[in-house]
Structures are given as C-alpha cells and as structure tokens.
Amino acid sequence: MAIIAYVALRKPGGPLTEQALAAAQAQWRDRGPRSYDLELEIRGGQEGAHEIQVRDGRVTRMTTGGKPVAESVWAFWSVDGMFTFLAQELENAKAPLRAHGVSDPAAVTLRVQFDAELGYPRYFLRHVTGRQSEIWWEVTSLEPREAAR
Image (cartoon, rainbow, N blue to C red; front, top):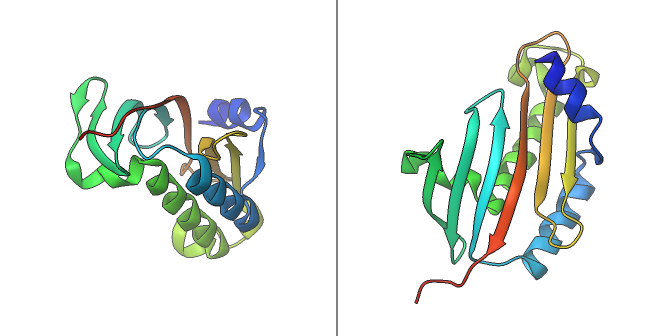
C-alpha cells in the first residue's frame, strides 16, 4: 500500500477541500454529459478495472474485470456517486477516530484531481498514516454517449 500512496501523491492535483469539490460539482453539472461510459481502476478496496455505463444520469450497467457487479453498488460509481463519495470522505476526515481509527485529522490525506474541462474527479487518494485503510482510484476513460431513446 505504501507504494500506491507514493505513486499517487506524486500525481498532479491537490488536497480535497469542500471548495474544490463544490466547484467541480458545479462544473460537471454545467458541462458534463448525462450519458457516458466510464472506466476506472481501483486499488485498496473493490480492486480492479471497472466499466460503468451511465444513461440519463443513472448507471445502467457495471462490470469489474468483465464480470457483472451487483446493482446495489452501481450508483456509487457514476460521477454523481463519486462526488457523494468524496463528500463523505471529507466528513470522515473531520472525525477520523470513528472513520479510520486515528485521533489526529492530520493523519488523513485526501488528494484529488478534477478534470479541467468537465469537472469530474480524475483520481482520488485516501491515505491514513499508520493504518491499512488506503484507497486509490483513477478514471482512465470517460466517453460521452447518446442517451437511449
């Protein structure tokens, strides 16, 4: 896990803040497509290559490594779901003892890079010093699509 943190911390981007999140959400709302195909790579939890199909703002299909994923997790991996996830990460960082088992908020590192054009989160890293609760994901592709009629 330390290697993942080292690599991810070297990526461009910066700390996840409420202001940056709100600005990215507004940008996505104004410029982002409602229908798209998304590919992302996750490490540290639900690991693997994920493919998500979103139509009219709703996930309609999701696979991991080519295998179907239960519908109960689909909504978390649309762009809107990723914004909800990031907001929860910010809340968890304010109460790190409950969320991560550490008392010092400085032990929780949250880094993010938002797409400059559309605002969606391109990558995210959560690293908790002294704990094995690291997660890292990166969007490798986001392709706008026509909504089904």
